[in-house]
Amino acid sequence: MTAMAKVILTDIEGTTSSISFVRDVLFPYAAQHLPMFVRANAHEPAVAEQLRAAAQEAGVAGDDCEAIIAALQRWIAEDRKITPLKALQGMLWEHGYRNGDYRAHVYADAFDQLQQWHAAGVSLYVYSSGSIQAQKLFFGYSEFGDMTPLFRDYFDTTSGAKQEADSYRRIAAAIGCAPVDILFLSDIRGELDAARAAGLQTCWLVRPADTTATEADLAASPHAVARDFHGVTLR
Ligand SMILES: [Mg+2]
Image (cartoon, rainbow, N blue to C red; front, top):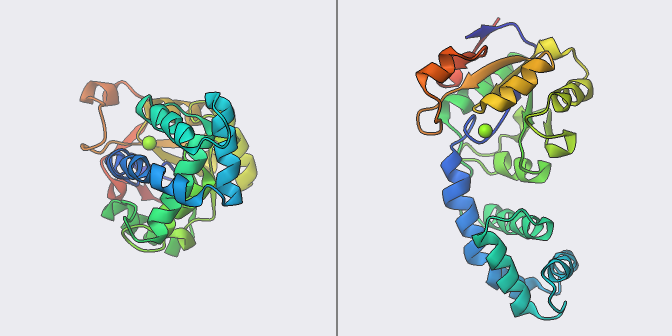
């Protein structure tokens, strides 16, 4: 696809990067290391604050470390999005990145094209459901090294849900440009629909390893389609 745009707003999972990295590397890492991390760091103020919140949520005593760990592990198994669990997972992932236990996956075509756009003066932004801190760690410790200098800024769900048009209006206002000057890249049809409703240009990234969309789905959609970042051309 070819677009006239001054600004690129990109999703991460399924777009710049494989969905499997988060599913198969980050979440298992947090689940595996959580008990040891909690026991070793329970007295750190930032950890203690989350453990108190977790204890309250679970209805167990605030000083019962093992009961809190059991609750956290149950929430992980049930895939619950409990705030203190998410906060502790974020701390564990930061530890893993800084410790070199893994590096964030980025497709080579995405790295290459983002670099070229950046060099050409295109403003690059990220919008992901992961927290802004998690996004910065992700690109700070990627397979291609520190990619954070490529991005002007990051947006997460504090700007609103990814399938709501108002989120994209807020982001355009925060960037300070007309929605039509922004090209949004995502692998999820509902996100593209919301962005389009807000007046952004859209491109559906359809990577074979990450998508469940069929050719019929693509043909029935109003969005431009690209198989990877090399398929996206800016004029
Ligand atoms: Mg995605």
